Picture 1 (cartoon, one colour):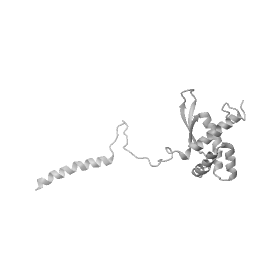
Picture 2 (cartoon, helix red, strand yellow):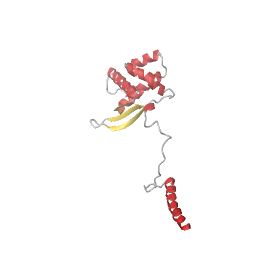
Picture 3 (cartoon, one colour):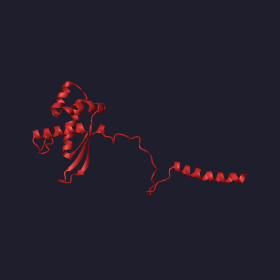
Picture 4 (cartoon, helix red, strand yellow):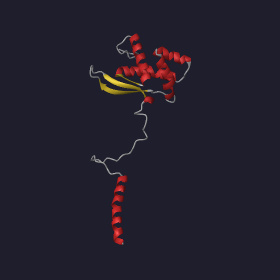
Length: 168
């Protein structure tokens, strides 16, 4: 039974697990997204989100606490400069996990874990979606009203030109 056993061991010793999560967290902060297995991504989310919360308060003590977890000066600098500015207004939920499917070699579930505020695809353009021509239920496109107006104008102009010489 695993009563009270909340930590995901990832089939590793404590020192190996600590080193693995430290390296994954450093890479996530540096590159803003990492592709890994689903189990590691879920363990990484629990590991890195408190560090991002600590980065909101830029003090020497918080920097030392985060460095004790990451052991990477460049990642700590990136976290306290770039990442903390982006997530300053967010109360939590700094990461997103997207399942990618099974890996070819060993059939392991893979996932993409990324920082939410650094995604160019999902974050931007939510309200700016273009409205194109609507599709009908049978799959063909309806003509938009702009095209219909142009067609009507084209049909009326030649008839006016044809009547003008007849009036002379």
